[in-house]
Image 1 (tube, rainbow, N blue to C red):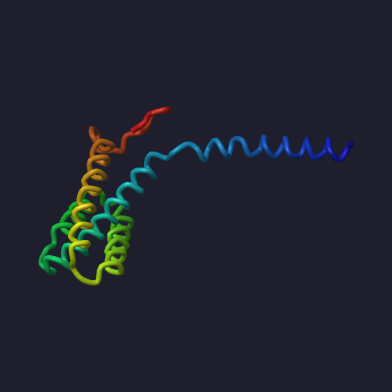
Image 2: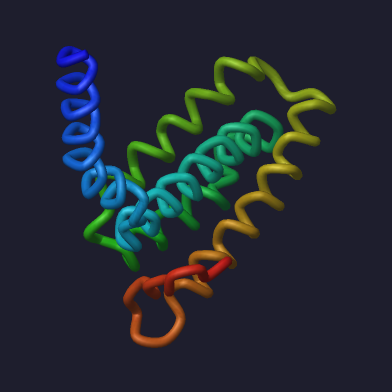
Length: 140
């Protein structure tokens, strides 16, 4: 009986100690979310860039130019944006060794996905140039 009481007390104290840590994990860092969205947009742009140059030739720099503009606006995230762009590029390079109808379709889908991500970032960044912090229970 005493072992059960000790085990119960131990479980209770572990749960109590873990409680604040678990609560902290649930709180989303708005800055980290903003960075993740930037990286995801850069990844999508890298994927789309590879497909565009594969289908239209190396002179088509539409998405590379866009990501360079992103970097100029978000210089603090230069390394992360560049990493995401390069990851995306390599991802599509492995999937589409040449241009075909599937590659053209994928670029169109990525263009739409990139637009949604860019619009979301724009809304979050509207106003003072800093990422907007979310309120508790906010469904953005």
